[in-house]
Image 1 (cartoon, rainbow, N blue to C red):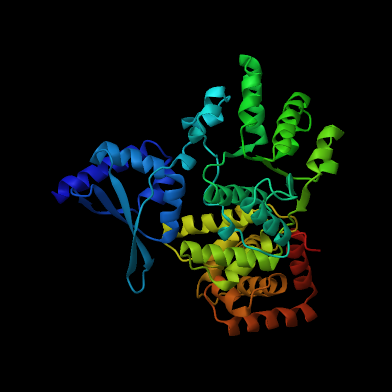
Image 2: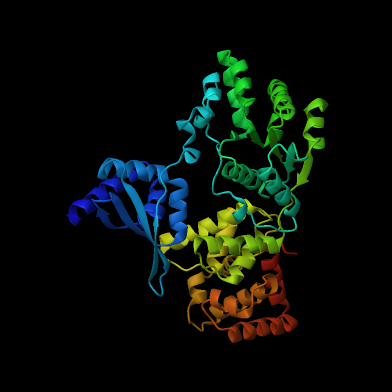
Length: 468
């Protein structure tokens, strides 16, 4: 019987493989271990290597998993996870997977993404709120840069349309958490008032819907639909700056909602006064409630966000790596999450621990930062290139003079241009101890005092980094 169930699970994996990329399959589905299938409860039990993998599967692939399980094991099959929470002590936790819900339904599965009609307005239960239910206030870490918007957001969610914060206009640079905050407002509001019609929509999707309505001669239906919303959340409204017809239509929708005490929440990358191309009659309405700025998080808030994510996902990232990521992610929450997700994916695929070297490589590829700090890999690459030796030769135990010089110069420049302690530099350059690093730096400094040709060599290497 078990072999038959394992064969059915293999069928599930084959179906999944046909619906995702090779890299996605290798990263998220290959590590899943089938344990059992209960005929009585119609439940499949699988083991996943970490809480992070479980969260990712539930967030992005719950629909796909449900479909393949129903096809292979039969309809109404449920999925349960055994999550490895501590590999050292072999601790696990069993959690029942979620069924695809209306709020998580793919955009193509609902009419809320199409041009609305009066039929939609007549059946409120069919409205997809378009919210990301994982972006909540509990995962929106508070700091000095977001305390006011977060506090006001909670008030708006708890008393929609009944505070002076209507409309609630949030602005800030990309990656500061605007989308997370306005989603959190919608999710909290929906929890407290399930009967209310809450809708999150991007400015671009709103414009596409409006264009379709004009083409199909259903503009009145489009306006009527939006006038039935109790809490309307619109993201990235700066994209309407040069779309006068879209703005005129939204003006009528805004007026109706505002006069009837409905809550309006708007997000933009700039304040109303800087929204060029929009008429004053609309800008004054945007400004009549509360305008709140979300600033880029400082280093401490970035550290708090990373630590919270580690606790939530069961990740183990060394403190010095977290500090490094926080200092180099350019104050972008989006970049922070992207780097951590990449670290976890690399760690799972290549079965390696998360350390500073891996973090440096991910940062170098994933984050565009002006004046990005040098990494040990950057330094090794330039020094090895200058002396025409390989990193493997530098890392070796050879005492050949050419290799020793490159090793010492690399350690000297790493100590000079990175914030790492000598012990970490030694680990990254051939797994040497801190005393070797200290000795190497001293040797280079002494030689620089007496050898002009050596001074020119070091200057040349530093110039290649554009450090001088």
